[in-house]
Amino acid sequence: MALPREVISVTLETLSDSNVFSTLLALALLLGGAYIGGRLMEAIRAPKVIGEILGGMLFGGTFLYHFFPGAMEGIFQAYPEEGKVLNLVYQFGLIFLMFCSGYNTQIAVGKESRRIIACVFIGATVLPMLGGIPFAFLMEDSFIGESKNSTAFLLVFLIGVAITSIPVISKIFFDMGVMNTPYTNTVLTVSTIQDLCLWILLNLSTRMAETGKADPLDMAVVVVLTLGMFVVAKLFADHLRVGYRKKVKAVSFYTVSFFGLLLACALLCRLGINIMYSSFLAGYIVRAVSKNDPEAAPRMQAVSDFAFSFFVPIYFALVGIQLNLLHNFSLPRFLFFFLVAFGLEAVGTVLMLQFTNLKKKVILNFAVTMNARGGPGIVLATVAYASKIINVEFFTVLILTTMLSSMIAGYWLRYQQKKDPEVFIKLTKEEGGDGRLAHQKQS
Image (cartoon, rainbow, N blue to C red; front, side, top):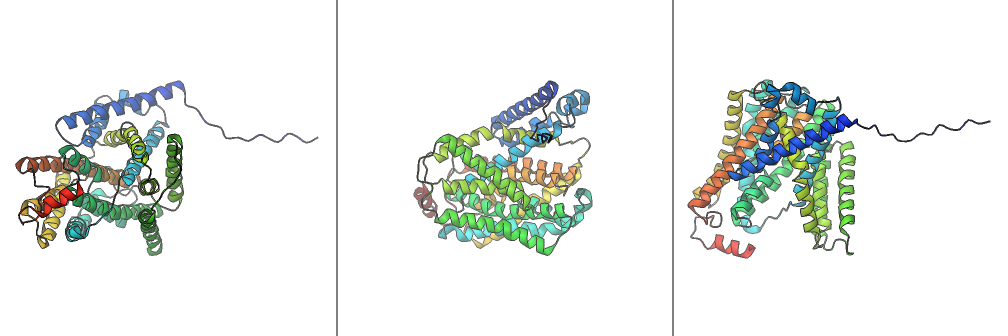
């Protein structure tokens, strides 16, 4: 008589009640700290993301964990797997941050602004990266991570020097009421092109850190694959005149979008593409497919509102909780890197814009604005640190550089607007006309 076959099924291990309690308490504290910190920053007209990071720092080694290690371990390290559970929420924060960024990304270069865009891009990206090479070699011993991959570290260092934040800059422009002006459109277009190039380099560096070597063929495949996917997505978006034709229910729109997002992250991860770039690409494609659906934009706004009220603040708070300014930090090295990064990007931008007919104060505004690193700067730090390309000190340095540069850009632009309300409309040395006309056309 044949014995019955053993029934094999998927089983899920459950957390104990105490584990669930500590996990939910940890998430609640992180979210609460991020919210309070964000509101405080908004009250002084500083980027909200800075407050969300500070809210996480409150529970880390710089503050409460330093003075009450037992109590903090009982909340954030109550059981061996709690770090992995929190990291999953952290990963979802990164995924939705980049997904929403991809959806809101537009690359449109008008004939009249090509020269300015090219000069800003070269000045704020190419020149700073070239200028940063000797400084990368100088600081490698202090900042390189456990992978000990010098090439991957070099790329991350140069990205850290040149990166600019689209979300933070957009939020500053929106709060100031200057969106869709010639100045803001130029900044956002350059930042989009710049970040795309830098995401490709970051993906390349994480691949090298993962494989442990810089195989030219493997590097070429990753670059071609990463860039090729965006080119295909861009061509698809440009030539797709009509998206889906049938009216789609909200639940179906969300389910299909999230299915595509998670599937893209999973499959591309197997090909060596970081989830950060995969999420960005998924958001860009969703926008292309749904561009003729009048209900798509408000639905994606709802996704963005939820993500930026839960996953993203916790993501930034978990960034902050890892910072330890008491033990893993050198003030002189931080100041040196900040001055190098800020100076190279500012000087490069000013030099290249000498080939345009922009006003001097407009050139200076570009030099400061392109230094706002914001969310992308934080993503760079977290991805590079997770891949062991950089150590905890450089992770801290990159985060603090991001926070300080974003604050400087925000306060500087508001000061310039107060001095001259039309500074973002009239960009050239000629009297008015062109800038005002361009603004009127876009309005």
